[in-house]
Each structure stands twice: as structure tokens, then as C-alpha cells.
Length: 465
Image (tube, rainbow, N blue to C red):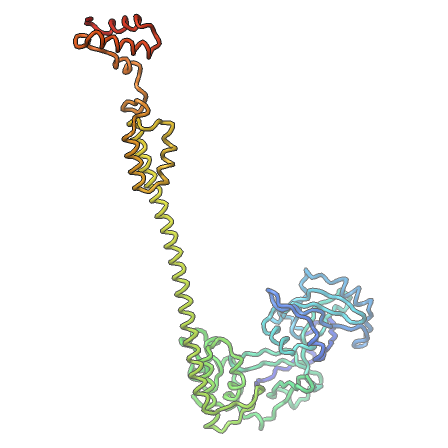
């Protein structure tokens, strides 16, 4: 809103001596035809007309000059900046030039806007004038600036900075032949929708019925002076917005109006907080007979505000409940995943334990001669696929079957000595027929004559019958 204007004298302007600036303006139709693209870094403006061949400030610029000096010497890697009003400060860099191309007599530029305020102003149709900064000595393009000029000849707007949290706009202007009687005056920048131009309105002392609140003064105000306040206040510049009372607690009419005009643009506060602030400011307007007319239309101050506030409160509560439900669902999902993982580990351990029990059972069967060593792993694999009851039944069945091999306690086949001991007899206790049967069996097993078998038996046994 209202703000003390800073004027830069002609002989102390910030434009460097080795640079010439040529300004080109787009009309409303041009802006609508511009192609843009949302990218990760910002907003890419394509084919912006920034310069036209012809005579500017007494110098002739030809199409050949555009090609040789501006286009051929342009290197995207040099990051030619897009500035605000030819500012020398990096703080006023809005983005970078990405491409230059000439079509006929017109030079077009692709520009990537990085600054949020620049992107916002473009989308609102407020960046329609572009000024190309070129080196006098033909070194090429120095920068491209977004500029704005009011349509009074005495002053041209160089830059605007707007703080929505307090609703103030600082405007720096460069002047030529500025009348002495407006030096240091208060003024206001306005925009004429019909003419599509900015203009500067200098306020007379009689029309300036409010004090100018600086940022320092606003920072010194108590929390109660603001329409929007977070709890707790950790950062005064972010957690408080729209001051409307002075240090003494008195209501300032101009700042009440300003707060109502700016309240829909304030970010970082809930809809409920904004609705309450609107109600407070509306009541002040009602009781103080303050007339307010904003760009959005007259401010409505009927009793439906209470219903709107209740509706907003319900929406906030519903949103909060929905967020809690979503958070709870996420926590349940995480717990379910952990449970599934635990069950998987439990199953793996159970399978490992079952396999251990199976191996133990099979080892017992092998030691008892019910299965051969070669069959051991196959029996393990088979039994591992059975239920516990089936394993018991299968094991019992094998135990009742005849032994396949004759193994000793170590699980090895019995030695020849052990086998020979089976044919060791006590002749004193046996009949001749019985002895002969054993000798014949031994001869058959060894594949030797019966007489030889008989000699072996008699040698092994000390008593002969």
C-alpha cells in the first residue's frame, strides 16, 4: 500500500556506463500467446520478444547486428541473467536466459524464471516490458531485465518488493526532470486495467491521513496488533501478519483496510484463522464506519460470517481426523508388515527344527539296519515332507521291517572276524548231524569244498566230537 518512495537522481543511477538498454513492450495479446512450461527449477518462458531491429536512442541496430553480436556470442553456459530493472545485485536475479533466436526483425528469448515472485507476477500478467542490456563495445548480451514504467513522464518504476505478511510495497524509481515539489513525498503505485499500465500517484499531505509503518516499526509491535498470529510466535516475520493496531493499541483505519485487501493472499495460516481474522476486521469496519472497496469486490459483512466460520471449523476438524486416520492406517500397515516378517522367520525356524528331528529319527533307523547309508538322504527328504503323525507311522513301519544290513554299534558293516565268530561252535554240545549242517552252510557261503570247511572248523574248535 502506501510507502515512502526512494528516488534515484539522474546522475547517480545504478546503470553501468558500458551498457546500453533498449526496452520492448508486449501487449495483453502477446502475453496470452506465450508458451510456458513448468520445470523442476521454475517456469520456462518460450519465445519472448525482447528486441527489434531498428533505431534506438540514435543508434541503428540491424538484423546482422542481432545475429553477430547478440546470438552468435551467446553461450547458455555463461548464465546470462534475467534481472529486475537492470539491477546489479544478485538478489534481484529472477532467472537466466536459455536461448536466443531471430525471426525477421525480432529477437526472441527463452528465459527460465527461478524467483517465486517473478513467476507469480508473470502469471498475473504483470511482466510485459523487457529491456535488453548490451555492451557498447559489441561484446554481446549482458542481461535481460523485466521492467515496469508508470505513465507519467517524470518517474519510471525500477523495482517493486511486496511483503504480503504486512501488506507493504516498496517502490524504487529512477527519474528525469523530477519536479522538486514532489521530492520525498508519499505516493502509491496503481495499475490501470483499461490502459494496462502502471502509474504513480503522488499523495498530497491532506490525502495522507495515515502514518507510514516501516518494517522495523512493525517488528516492534506486540502480537495483539496483528490480525493473524500463530501460537507460539517463533519468527515475527512468519508467524504474524496484517498489523492493524499501533504500539499503543489504537486501531489504524488504513491498516484495517489494507489487512482486508491483503488477507486472501496471506500464506501459512489455516482457513479457520483467516476466517476469524476476517470477522474481527469486519466488525471493526462495521463499528468504525470504514468504507472498504477491494479488487475482489465489496467486503460482505452480514451474519453469514458466523456460519462460514463454523463450516470452516468443521472442515478443519474433518481434515485433522482424516490425517489422523491416514497416519493410523500407515502405522497399522507397518505393524502388519513386521508381523508377516516375524511369522516368516518363525516358520523357517520350525522347518529347521523339524528337519533336525527327521535327521535324528533317520539316523536311528540306519543304526538299527532298517535303511542303508545310501538311502539316508532320500529318506530324510521324504520324511521332511510328511506331517508329524505320518512320520511316526512311517518310522514305526520301518522299525518292524527286516534289517537290510547287519551293522555294528558304529554303523559299519560287521568285520570278517565277527562273521567268522558266527560259525564258532561248541562241538561238545552239538550232534554230528547238526555240526555237518553248519559246515556245509559255511562251505556254501565261502564257495569251498566241504572237507576244507570241516578242517577249518576243527582247527577253530579245540574239542572234536
